[in-house]
Image (tube, rainbow, N blue to C red; front, top):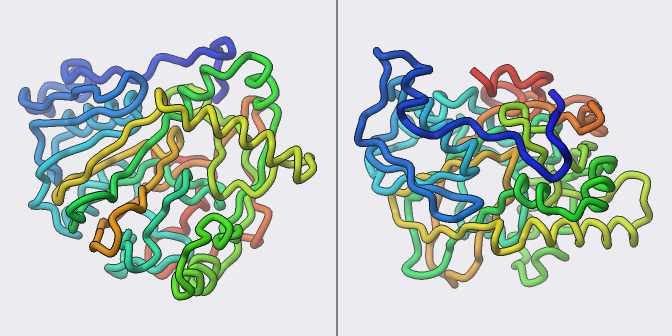
Length: 342
C-alpha cells in the first residue's frame, strides 16, 4: 500500500493502550490488567511489564504487544528466565511464521540463530537484519542467556523517525532511490581488527550463498503506512550512481538514522527479551565486553517484499531464487507478506 500522508509526516501508529487492543480482540481474550507499556525515549523504545512470555498468551495480550512494537519500534521485557528454546519459538509464532537464517545454521536445528561473541556475533555496525533477501524479516525476537559483567549493549534506531525528519529536498531525493543489498560485503573493511577465524567463518558460512537484492531506499510500511529508510551495512551501492556518489549520499542519509534522538540503548540482563520491528529499525551490537562471554538467541518472523513510494517492489537479483533451508520455509521468499500479518 502507499501512504497518503504528506512527505515528512507519518501515519499514526496502531494504538498501544491495553483497552484498545482488548476491545479489538474481544472480551474473552482481554489482556491482563497488570500489563503496562512505558516509553524509554521520545522516538523509540518501551518496556513492557506484567506479562510472562510464552506460546500460551491470549490474543488480547498479543495484540497489545504487537501494537507496542509497531508504535515504539523496539520493546523490552525483563526477567523472562522461564523461556527456553521451545518457549521462545512458541511465543515468536504468535507474531507470525518463524524463518531460519538464509545461510547461517541455527543452533537448535530449527529457527534459533546464535548471537555469540566467540562465534562472529560481534555486529558492531548499523544494520537491518537480512536485507540482502527480498522479504527480510518483519520482527526479530532476541533472548539474552549469558551477559558479560560490562559492555555488550545493543542500540536501535528508528528509521521512520529519521525519514520523517529529513529536509524536504532529501526526502524527495530518497523517495526515488533504489539500492543493492548483499551479504558479500567487505567484512574486513567493516571489522578491520577481526581475527582470521572470524573472517573465515564470514566467508565460508555467512556468504556460502551470495545474495543480491534491490530494495527501494524508502519503503512504505505495510502495517503502519509510515515511510522508512532501507539502508545499513548490507547496502552495497545506490542503483544508477557512481561509487563515489553512492557512498556520499548513503553516508548523508545514514547519518540521520544514527542521530542520538532517533536511538535507544539497552543494557542487557540475563532473561531479557527484546522484540523489534525490523522493517522500521536498524540496530548495533556494541563490541566492548572484551573476552567475556555474551550469548543471545534470535528467532525471526517472516516478512513481506518491500514496496517503494512509487509502488515498485524489491527484486531478487541473485541467485535465481532463495534456496530452501534445512528447516521451514525459505527466508525472504514471501511474495506478499501474508505470513507476517497473521
